[in-house]
Structures are given as C-alpha cells and as structure tokens.
Length: 304
Image: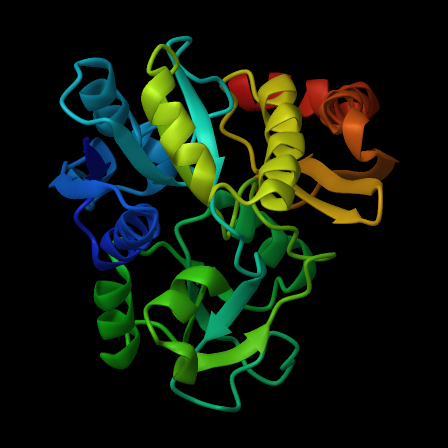
C-alpha cells in the first residue's frame, strides 16, 4: 500500500509533510509526496484578510483528496477552517510544538515593551494586529506576506525592524537566532491549532484511517479538537481575530479563547475548564459565552 501525501510546496510545509512521511515509513508504509499549490500561495501580493481567509491554504489540497488524487493532506492546524467538508475529517494530529508567538529582529534591543522607540513590525495576522494595537500602540504595523525565507530577507533588507511569527515554524526552519522575545500566551493568545500539524483524509477511507491513527498524538488531538469546537461554533465566516488555546493537565481541560475587533479596541476573552471527556462541549460553551458577552455585536459591526 502506497500512501500519497499532499502538501503545499513551501519549505515549512515540506518539513511538516516529510515529518508525516517519515513517521508512516517507520511504521512500514510506502509513501510519496505530491506538491499542490494553493490559492494563498499564489496570491502573495495581497494581505491575507483580503483573500477571504477561509481555507485559502487548504482548499486545493482538500479538493485533491476528494478527487482521490492523494490519500492524505498535511495541513498546519491553524490554517484549517472551522467548518470542514462533510466528506473529510482530521484523522491524526502530530505532537504539538509550543504554540506561542515570537518577536524576531536583527537587533537585540528590539523589544515590544521598549517605550523609547517606535518599531516597524511585520505581520500578516489580524489576530496579532489586534493584540499589538491593544497592548503596544506605540509601534507601527506593516503587512508582510511570503514564506519564512522571504520574510527574513525583508527583515534583513531593513523594510521592518521586527516580525511576529509562530515559534513552531521558526524552530522547524532553524531560525531561532532571530528570536528576541517570546510572547506570553495569556496576552498574545495563539490561533486555534497553532503549532500543530494535522493529517486530513476522506471519511470513507477506512484503510487509510487505520494507518494514520498510528501516528496520532492523543493529547494534542484532544486539545486541538477542543479549540476547533470553539472555532466552529463562533466563526460563522467572520473575518475578525478569533483565538483559542486548550491545555490538558491531569484529567482537566482548560480553554482560553476569545474574539477581538481588528483595531484592538475590544477583546472579549474568557477561560473555562472541564473534564477532558467533556472538552468538545467546553469549546461550544465558551464560544456561546463569548458571543453572548459582546461577540455577536462585534461580528455584526464587522459585517456592516
């Protein structure tokens, strides 16, 4: 049995896909990679929020799955929309890397709390923009697109004083020398699924499901499922910053999650806990609380 693994073509995506490939080959399976270009990879001249946001890095891979051109699709969990195609499912999630954001710079003195200077900070994330505007309004935010190498090159050319990116990608690409600050997950709450790699399959493909389940990391899978139940309940196609971070300790699941206005003026954020076996309802209940405590109004205003 040869397993065809679909992936984007960036260095980071290939690192993730090769990680899945190696894990499956260690289990004795024959594999091959299929590189598929996504809409988000093609449209690098526009800010992400202008491209619609939902599935821009995953749709082409999912379509290849549905057309039986590949057997599995490897995604960064944070790129997967809350609502999946009804014929697809996340069959496995690899062990999560630390999900926090990091500040990158060439200069060691660059720090968000530095009140003496206004830094130009690059990010393509509306979530990070909202947090920056709320907590560090002295800095200038400038949109940036492209893969990690492209972004680092723009940093080195002087277009930006600093970048904010996910630690997971920086570590996987061996770029930790640029890290100047690890950002607290209680302030810069991670995106849903940040730091984790998901393996998507067709629901009807029971054979591949059995294979892929062998590389699943159960704790990460449960935490991501909790976050995604929150995302699915709250999102409804809105383009506002939505964030959520779940953690298991002993038999307890905690979820810190919320929603923000793009200008950072309003951030609605709560933390709830439950037993691990009730973590799906935990995500749903926290989403309902956020919506009832002002989230609905934020979404309504953003659409008007």
